[in-house]
Length: 372
Image (tube, rainbow, N blue to C red; front, side, top):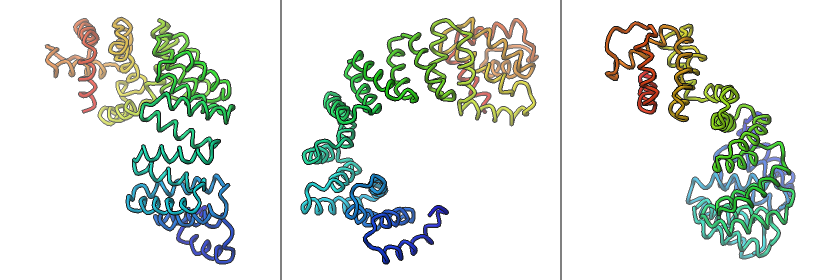
């Protein structure tokens, strides 16, 4: 199995089960092997037997659910599985594994109302089953019934008061209903319970962002950055907030890192290096990062002076070829008349200023031209 040679593993597991047909783990392992061989129907039967022999294993339950999800791509097989659970529940109506599996089969058929009812039935016989409250809260939230989601999340927390994720979900639902102070308190609790996760930190930062309280965004995003320095959402929050507070020097390293991490930027850079050559100054990562930063200041922040300063640095870093690219672009747009020299003169400087004033149209067209 570790070598992923599932065809070779299967007869060994068949033999193991023949020798000891009461050991639940063999059935789960064979179910995993059969799923990897795309035999999901028989895999599910193995997981059923495993659950009968031992319904306490979360590992076995996880693989059973995964097999159900795989069967979800086969509607007929999924209906067969659902019929099986319905029949089993008529004999043992309080079987937790079968109640959970029936819910999953209904959910995978997009029968959301029936799935919700299945969870409610499960909770009638297992009133302290945390998983069911978490699942039902998600379904309620998906249907924008946030008040019901809040009640289930609160019950989730009563059962697991040290579960940071439960507080995070409660905060998400409270936020949707406009109960911002309560949401912040729930995020605070999630952060206190799990200070090493960026998830509740950035969720709370998003509230500050919506309130345009950029100083508080910076506090939370900085803590998140210390935990995960390469996350683009965190980098964006930091440079955007620092720009909004007028602290451009503090914004720049985060903006620079954000630009360089963008997949589109790296794809664009590779295309440019193919066209101009890797050693061409205009195709260097440093020069192109300056170009994108200039566009961002012009288009996203409406900071023409800052954009102009950065674009001048771009032309200096990219040299004559960077100026040529810009002049050719202007000529193609019908905005440049005269000899294309590659010299950064007053005429070109005025054209840069005109482009910054029309940032959205001008720079988007430039990006298209250079990509082509």
